[in-house]
Length: 324
Image 1 (cartoon, rainbow, N blue to C red):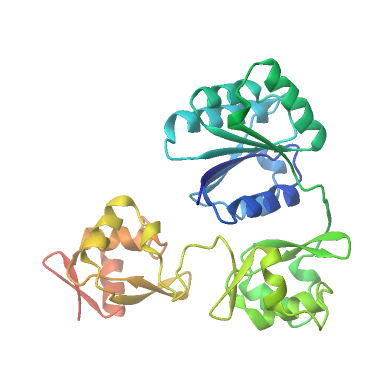
Image 2 (image 1 turned 135 degrees about the vertical axis):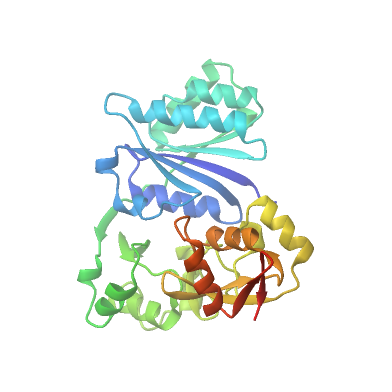
């Protein structure tokens, strides 16, 4: 059964490699509805910042003792009251200051997963039992103890790969094992699997005898149409068309009732993107579609919209969008 999980990360005391690997584990077979990371903005790892999205959010905590814990507590309490469909609240932290908000979650019949070091987990269990909290609603776990030992930058990559990454890299990284060390590597979501294989071998992660199909699952990656992607990449279906499930509810309902499989190709960040299209849809609905998937931003003027409609082989007629 797929569970809906909201993850809360204390970036002040959990190493980023451990936190992101924990996110990958939780996302395996479940739906991460949101991930909130709390830390001081000027010391927050770029790997967190580059992952910012509607569901992966970072929060700057005020300076001072326990400021991150207080910010996390507020976010958790907000989720308890506002997210009726969320099954599990996962707290990734090595602090022990969350007992009161855990008590609140249990009172509201929310499942809580608390992940930290073994020592923190044992201490928290004792605290919760002293508060007579129903432990049937609480699961205590230990974060993977492996620590990041090396981070390989794009500039450190071998010739050929370096130039490819300079042109295409958008800041994503993955964490891999090399011997008994944990290594952070630059990664391009959707890169050709042969280039990825070359990356892994030339960075001495895999040997020539290792096959990508045998190893990729352990990295929480997947192969789709000979492209390597994050397992939680959900912006596009295997055929390159954005999934209807990712749309706002009103747009989703419109497509469920009107969509007949027609597609159009538009530009997003200089690259082609296929979108589901309904001939005769209202211009306002079409604009919502384009904004939802990042093809247009809110600053796009009507004149520029009309020019792009023509470029895409579309026309505006009586406030509705049709193929030419």
